[in-house]
Picture 1: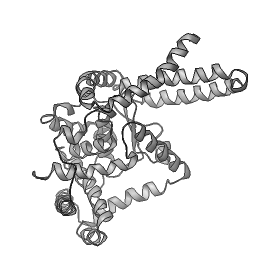
Picture 2 (picture 1 turned 90 degrees about the vertical axis):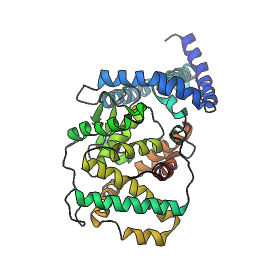
Picture 3 (picture 1 turned 180 degrees about the vertical axis):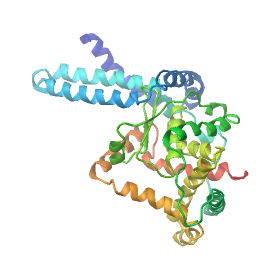
Picture 4 (picture 1 turned 120 degrees about the vertical axis):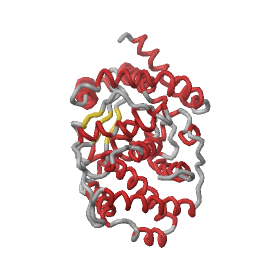
Length: 355
C-alpha cells in the first residue's frame, strides 16, 4: 500500500468515528436505509456463501489473522524505534480499513432504532408488574416441565444433538416472521465453534462474525440454554446488534417454536432474568417465589452456574472488561449491564397477551 493511500486512510479513521457519533442522533435513518434496507441483502448473501460449509470459516479467518498479527509484530517490532512514523501509519491505516468494513458489514446496526420503539413497548415497569409476570412465567415453566413428561424434581435433558437444534430453531423464526417480517431467517448459517474451549474460558456462549456473517456457538454448552444461544446468534445475523435485544428476540424465537423442548427452554430463560431481577429488588419475595419453581428447573439453572464456575479464570475478567468497553463504544451506554433491559421488554410485551 502506498504511503499516500495510508495517509488518506489514517485521516479517514477519526472522520469515521465522528460520523458514527452523529449517527446516534438519526436512528430512523439507519433503520430505514441500512438495517431494513441494505443489511438484509448483505446478511442473506454472506449466509448463502458461507452457510453450506460444514466448518466455521470465521474461526479459521480469525486464527490466520492472529497468526499474521503475531508474525507482523515480530518482524516489525524494531521499527518502533527505527521507523516510528511509518510503523504507526501502518497500524492506523489498517485499523481504518477494518473499522470501515466492520461498520459497513454489520456494525451500523448498533445505531438503529431501539427494539422497544419499533415494537412500541414501554421500558418502564414497577415491582408489582415484575412479580406478576414472574409468577406467570413460573406457572407456565412448571406446566411445560410436566408436559415434557418429567417429574418435578428431574432436570430435563435435550433430546436433540446440536445439528438437529440448528434446524429446529428455524421454526420459531418462521412463526415470528408472520407477525414481524424482519425476523424472517433464511438461509441457515450456524456453526459449532472450533474454539469452543477458548470461548468457554473467556465466558462466552457464542459469537457472531461480521466478516463472514456466520453464527458460532460454543459446543461445550450442552445444557438447557443451547437453543437460546442459537437463537441469540441468529438475532445478531438478522441485524439486532444490541445484546439485550438479541436476548429478547431469542426468548421470543424459542417461546414461539412449535417444539415443546425448545419452547420450554425459552420460558425458563425468560424466567431466570425476571427472578434474578426480583432478587435485586426484594430478597424476601425472591426466596418465597423460588420455592414455587420446580426443583428440576432449579437444577438446570445450577447446572449452568456450575459449568461456568468450573472455567473461571483471570483471563475471563479481562475478556469481559474488553467486551464491556466494546459495547459502550458501540452505542450501548450500559455495556454488559444493558442485558437487564430485556426484563422490561418481557414484562411489557407480554402484559396483555398470554404466554
